[in-house]
Image (cartoon, rainbow, N blue to C red; front, side):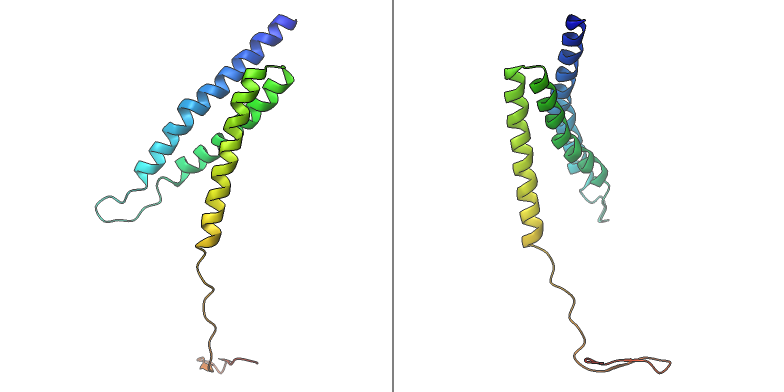
Length: 125
């Protein structure tokens, strides 16, 4: 029974590592290339690929750390732990970049705006 559990945990760790090293970069590349506008049209075609790359890039190392720690495999734990720290660092940098470059709130009207039908929007009303 213990040998079967070792085989399954080894297979799960290998699949997590393969997904992290092969699938995540492939999805990122697909999303990056699909984000370029073609013939002058703007498109968000790559957003789905990039979303999947982000979720897998954070989820696979987390699953790998848990499986490796439960199986007491120090090498795999270090590998997935370093990958998880890198994923958290990249997510934090992306979050800081989004917060820093947030658009300013729309300006409020500073004078009365008459509306058809009798309504108006005056500051202070």
